[in-house]
Amino acid sequence: MQQTVVEHIEPVAQDVVALTLRARDGHLAPWEPGAHIDLELPNWLTRPYSLCGDPADRDTYRVAVRHDPLSRGGSEYVHRFLRTGRPLAVSAPRNHFPLVPAPAHLFLAGGIGITPLLPMLRAARAAGRPATLLYTGRSARTMPFVDELRRAHGDRVRVVETERQGRPDLTALAAALDPDTHVHCCGPAPMLAAADAAFPADRLHTERFQPTERAFGPGTAFEAHCARSGDTVAVPAGTSLLDALADAGHPLPSGCREGVCGSCEVTVLDGEPEHRDDIGAARGRMYTCVSRALTPRLVLDL
Image 1 (cartoon, rainbow, N blue to C red):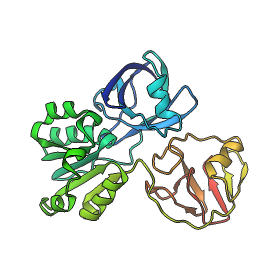
Image 2: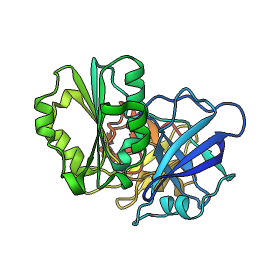
Image 3: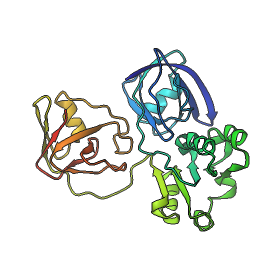
Image 4: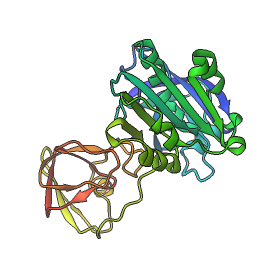
């Protein structure tokens, strides 16, 4: 973990604050647009947030946090109790939503989904590639960084306030899109579903804050053998691999616990995982918060 201090807390929209985290010693780990970090909050919770600052700045990270009325304690703590000067441990950046090189870019953001797309838009324009942003939200007052985006990018940013203008027609937008343009989309589930229906799958890249609703069979019991320690951990049918490992003295970082952030990734040395995540685990990897086993035993690099 990297050690930072909360340097600045700034309201950037209704119920949204931006945090500037400064390195306590040396430089922070480098990152690229689309990356996120885990914050270890003082209330013992770990939560993932997309980086929305400048990748060239190795001294600070910036993230934005919306106050969720159904918060499990993460956003509530940030909004009610976090103060400047507070030390915070943060993970190294991880990126499951990279900016895919393309001749041209369209970015689609819904609400707090603007955070990973903000540095993508800057990077695409800095590289000299045509890039536009369609940014939707209930109203401008609820949409973080609207003024910053308009100042920096002018008419390349289209802001749609859905309570006045309704939702944009993504099907019509897709029909008019140049075939070389790639689309990066992050936002609420209805926006992602509309984007999935409108744009070709090979040119659409999405990030989800909530898992896709999918049906899986019952989770059967299995064993997880930790190759480095030699321990074998029983994983009951109703217990996640993440929790079983923690109970056996092998805690892993965990943020979302829903298979969308990637903080609980492990390497699988033997056996076949049953992947239930929304990231798309690489071969030989799995996410322990939701995924299980298709074989009676998994061997993990733990």
